[in-house]
Length: 604
Image (tube, rainbow, N blue to C red):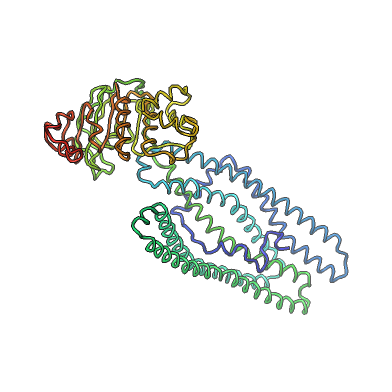
C-alpha cells in the first residue's frame, strides 16, 4: 500500500545505491538555478499543471492511511466497509492516473527544454573562435554536450516531480499527524532528526571516498586507453608484463576504495530502517497504552503508524535529490560557460564584400601571441604579389602555422596589419574572406560519407565529372577507382581504411574543387613516404598554378619550385628568396637543406 502511494516499503533497498555518490557542487547555485529557470519561459503553464498534479498525488498519499484507519475503526465498531473500500480503490485509481499525467507533462516539458539547450549549445559552439577549441580538450567539450545535458535532463524529468510530491506529502502528513496526536508526532520528529543527522554524517564521509574512486577510475581508464592505442609499441618493446602489473595495481586500488565507499554508503539504509522500526515500535507501545486508557481509537493508531512510515522516508530521498540537483546545476554552469564565451568578431559596419580577389598580401609590422606575455610573431613585414607560390619554413614553434591562422582570421593580429588587395583583412566580411581560401591541413579531416561527398564538401551539388576532374588533378583518381564502389564508397570516420597519403590526396582534391583564388597547404607531405610525397608534390604544383599559395613544409625538397621561400625563426623573418637565392646565400636555409637532402652548394 505504501508502495502504491509512492512511498518505498519499510525494508526496501531500491534507492540506497544512489546515496553517497560523489556530488559536484556548483560555484553559484542560486545564479545558475535562476538561469535554468529562465529557460522554462514558455513552459510555465505546463509547470503549473505539474505543480497541481503533484499536489493531487500528495493528497492521495495523505488520505489513504486516514481511510484505512477509518476502516479499522469501522470493523472495531461493527460497521459495514463497502463505502470505505470503494473510496480507497477510487483513491488508488486517481493516484495512478495523476502520476501518469504528471510524468507525461514533465517528460514533454523536460525534453523540450533539453532540446533547446542542445540546439543552442551546438549553435554557439559553431560560432566560437578557434582559440576556444585550442584551449579546450575535445573530450571535455563532448562531455558537456552529452553528460552535462543528460544530467540536467534527468533532474528536470525525474527529480523535480519527485521533489514536489515529497514536499507536499511531508507538509500534509505533518499537519494531519499534529491533528491526530501531538505526543506521537513529537516521537516521529525525533526519528526524522536522527535520520537526517545520520544521512549528513555518512554522505559527508562517502563523498570523499567516491571522489577518490572517480579519480582512480580515471587513471585506470587512461591506462587502458594508452595500452590499447599503443599496443604495437608495448609489444615491440616487450613491456606487456609491466603494463599488466600497472593495470593490476590500479585495479586493486580501485577495488579497495570502491569497497570501502560502497560499504559506508550501504550503512545508510539498514540503519535508517532500524531507526524507523524502533520508531514504529515506540509509537505502537505509546499508542497502545493510550488506547487502553481510552485516549485514542484503534483506527487512529493504524493511521498514525502508516503516517509515521510515510513521514520519515522522503527526507533521505530529498537529500539525494538535492545532491543530484547540485550535480546538474554544476553541469549547467559548464554549459553556460560555453554559452557566455565571446563569439568570433562580428563584421565591421559597412564591411567590404569579397568575391574573387587578386591575392596580393602584405604584412605590415605584425605582432601576435596566443598569450600576450609570450609573443610568437614580432614585427613581421612581408609583401606577397598576386599569384605567388610562397613557402614558409622554419623550426617547430617558429610561427609558420600562426601566419596561416592570421591570414584566414582564425586569430586577429595583436598589432600591425595584414592587407589583402590593399585592404585590412578586418575590413572584409568574414564569410567572404574564408570562401576565398582552399585549405589542405596536416591533419586530414574526412567524414563518414562517400568519397564523392568528401571531395565536394566545400561545393555541394557539383556534377560528378567536376569531382573526378579535381581528383585527377590531385592525383587521387587512380586509387579511388580501385575502391569497392569507386566515388560512392562510404568512408569510415576519418577515412581509417585509406593510407595517410590517400587521405591527403583527397583533401587536395577537395581544395582543387573549391577553385579558390588562394590556396593554403599546411604540412601536406609530413606523414607520407617518398613516392607518395612526389605524387602530392605534383598535385600541389598543379593546384597552385595561377593562385596565390602558401605552403608550409618541413621537407624542403617539396618546395624547391616555390617563387618565394621565407625562413621564420624566433618570431621574425630570418631569410627570404627563391631556392637558388637562399642556397647561394649559404645561410640557415642552405644548412637545413643540405642536412635534409645532402646536396652541396655547387649542386644547388
